[in-house]
Image (cartoon, rainbow, N blue to C red; front, side):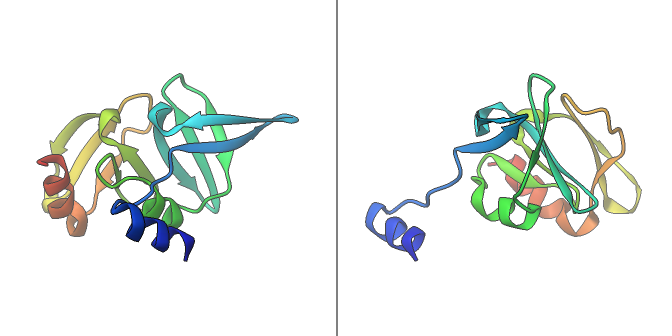
Length: 126
């Protein structure tokens, strides 16, 4: 309710600008500008930063998809959410899918599903 009221009074949606993550016995703040990508592995969600660090976060991908600015972040598939700045290469793949490479990511098999390709291209073309 508070978010809706804030949106109505400011005229803008309020998106997540930082993450609070646990690092040993400390808590640190990571700006969304430092996020390379977010990856779900089973029921665990990892936030990877552009400096190569990996942090466990509590937010599920479905929730992050709603709270991260859609102008900057896209839900690539069931496993990945990434900012535009992390997309390195995009290749056409068979069956209408796209294969993408993310900077700072060792996974070479990241695919945009056929159902999301249209939205992904629109997002890239803004």
